[in-house]
Image 1: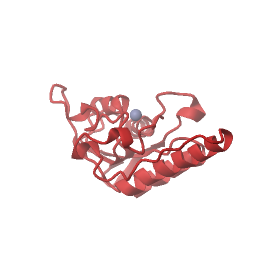
Image 2 (image 1 turned 120 degrees about the horizontal axis):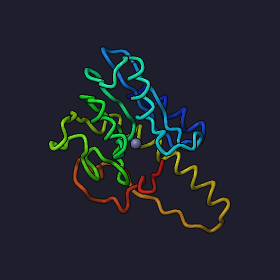
Image 3 (image 1 turned 90 degrees about the vertical axis):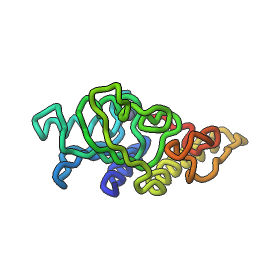
Image 4 (image 1 turned 180 degrees about the vertical axis):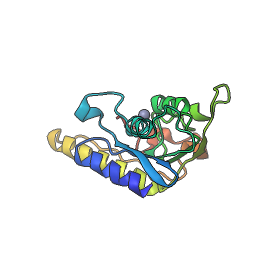
Amino acid sequence: MSRALERARQAAQSGEVPVGALVVRDGAIVGAGCNGTEGDQDPTAHAEMIAIRQAAEAIGSRRLQDTALYVTLEPCAMCAGAIVLARIPRLFFGACDPKAGACGTLRDVVRDRRLNHTCEVVGGVLESECAGLLREFFSDLRSERSAVRRGARVVEGGGLENRCGLKGHRGFESHPLRHLER
Ligand SMILES: [Zn+2]
């Protein structure tokens, strides 16, 4: 996950919402990506999609069996769908996404037993680092905006701890990542 965080930091340096993802197979990274929706003006350029595409190309198969996906933020419905289609067996994610999380928070696409593939999920891996990076990014963004709109009120949420959807669906209204949008 620390390697995925490096990717997320790269995204932040380019002015993108800091999310990074890796696909690992037999201990080797076969796909890596960071969020690029702004730079590419591509709504599908999420870190997971880029990492999955790269891994499929590297392995030479659309089936990514025997791999694990590491991503700093809980995947959205699109990425969760891609995880199912790619038959990725294991997902590790950092921060929960109260606005779009589709791996346990708002919905659970990857563990929906009606689908022909389900994925083992471990959330909250290096959660404070992953969430902290996002919080810092949005805090800087808000500071820039409030410098422009003087007098604008910035309402800070509390900590992320115990607000994760995996630990109970509550507190999203005051979740610090509630404005998250890639
Ligand atoms: Zn996504």
